[in-house]
Amino acid sequence: MQNYGLLKKAAWTWLAMFWSASAWAATTTFASDLSKIPAAAVAVALGLSLIGGAAATLRKIASPDVVITNMRWVVASDMLMAVVAGLVTYSVIAWQEFPLLLQPGCITIAAFGGSRVLDRYLGAGLAQVDRLAGKPQTEGVQP
Image (cartoon, rainbow, N blue to C red; front, side):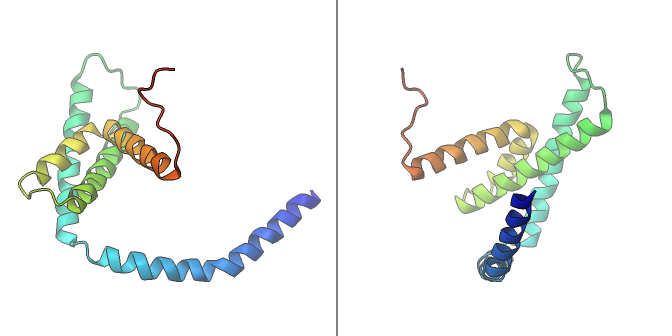
């Protein structure tokens, strides 16, 4: 119990020492970057994400192979995954400067894929972190 008190004091001390510097750094970097994102583009990406998510959810509901026990959770989960996948895709295609005619399709397809697309993004992101850390690539290598 004494170690818990010491740990709690150390956490509060660390927070008091570094919180203001971290908050200042976050506001100077993120605020300027986020203010450059056009709100109309995010609204369109959000709308396309909802369309893609609704299509995936309706397909799941109509499928005789899928058993749905709680409709609310299924709809909420699918729509949240679709919105996240669509907005992440919007960020990637804006960063990569995709042609304007491809962007709506990419966002809608990513939203339709939902968690499958997010799993791919996560895998690619983790592989990039491993490469930056100097970890040797083990996928596809025979033992």
